[in-house]
Image (cartoon, rainbow, N blue to C red; front, side, top):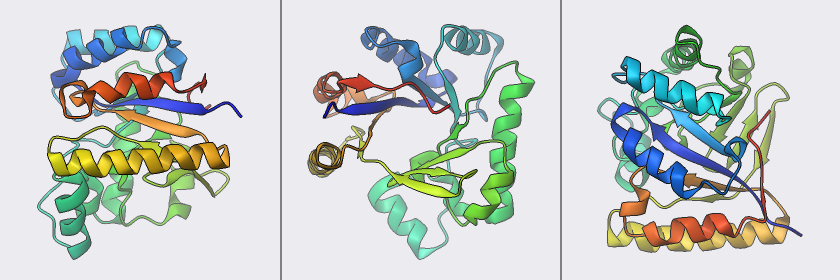
Length: 230
């Protein structure tokens, strides 16, 4: 069975523009439709940055919502403090919000694309894959259809969760590199064993971090890179 995969580049924002451009150049053998760009709207998007993003969209790169600021308030709950310490640091902005504020953030994220003449795809990925304290039934009324978490993909329209293994490379310490190597190997084997689609997530700084040399080889293992969620 051919290994299929979905590729995404996280944290697309003005301050990561050069690194995202470099990653896209190194993935040039892939069709643009197979590389989803996860855009953070609540940054200082200037005219030249928006033109760059529009150009990528016109070339066929799908755009997805990725939070608003990509930075959380001070963690209050024990769960958020643990999540921050071991996974997300200050990125999981949903975890510092209540349900109404999470819903408002997702709506604002989608609206930003429309107001700036951009076409958002149906995918929303909360920063650090942490959806937070929101009833999944309420997601059906929001403009995005699909929501990624660490475990897979939730289809809000059909109210179904689809498990999908995940690969990540954001390792800036020896411990994170060791943990992610185990995590990636386990998820790769799970994808082979089950035939499930493998998600490959690339952050702008990944090529410069401890697992940087692994990113492109992992992408090349995908025998069937899939187009973005329709």
